[in-house]
Length: 194
Image (cartoon, rainbow, N blue to C red; front, side):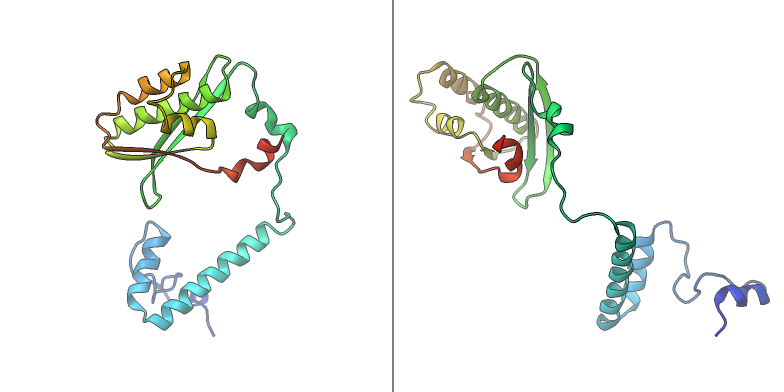
């Protein structure tokens, strides 16, 4: 059978690409896929997606041929970014109920502090983000058990950190419902174990 390249070398004004599928100018591959799927029935769509998946999988097998399956944490390369004696870092991720990421932030605090105070600083930053996004109902999750318990019993806590927690939560009038939950963050098993 003659290919389109051979036919185009013989006949003038014959397109080298497939004239049956590419009858428009597409800027992205996904546009072509959407148009092609509109023309096909369900069985043909299943075959089309299977063909796309197989070619993508073959490409990945070729590219990642010699690489191992397990990705391991290399403590010698990454330890400097995790442990620091005079800085604390924090991160905040804002998700909706789906859980689609809406926003977030991160930063460093250039002072020595206990873990509870660093976690409280992250909660304060997350309260600021919740206020800036006009979030009415918020569920805050932390893996710091003592901070979660102190926040839940903040009206009874007479310690210095309890006073700071009360001051932080005074500005939550615009939030209708604020809940703080302890969540096991098992994604950091290796660093937490060290």
